Length: 267
Image (cartoon, rainbow, N blue to C red; front, side):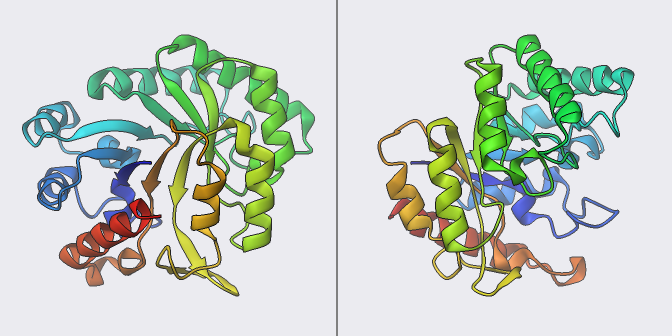
């Protein structure tokens, strides 16, 4: 299974107001030296860069591929007006073209309850618009909690209602427990195109642990998807990088990312 590294994995400020403590101009050379080549890119690493337009040249010089834009474009009608939706879509289009992204991660209605059919209807229409505007790009709807994906059945229904070839599901557990994760897998399996890899401690979903040690049975999940050779996976979070900004050790985190890559690719 194809393996990517997410730049968010090396960003300890990801959930703080600062968002970025490690600019891409510093991260990318270290990532390349560690042997990674294909990347999913945390959108704030682009939006908050000192010179975003210069970054494609750096990717090229390091022989790094910007494969997936991990976008925070919010299609929830409660927080994004029609005008803001159009402006946000134009930003996504510009980044896709600038970096030649082939895929874009979207949240399927962040903050939208699966039972809110009016909001789900607007989200569906907006995703259809996005997919039509960029038909050459694959849009991956992440099964992230706090969205329509809280109901795997409703997310599957949404994708099937869209019925467009460039929209599928990016699987991550909405509940970090073995049984719910495997049940979710079975419901979403036919529409899954990508995996986001992370794991949490058994009995403590707030604690990040190595892929081999946590509640999510990644080996069973990979085996369950073995009949689809086109699915890829991104290492999203690593335990050593879940820390305060002033305690972040880039070398340690990259070494852990390499070890996680080796473990996953041996499954």
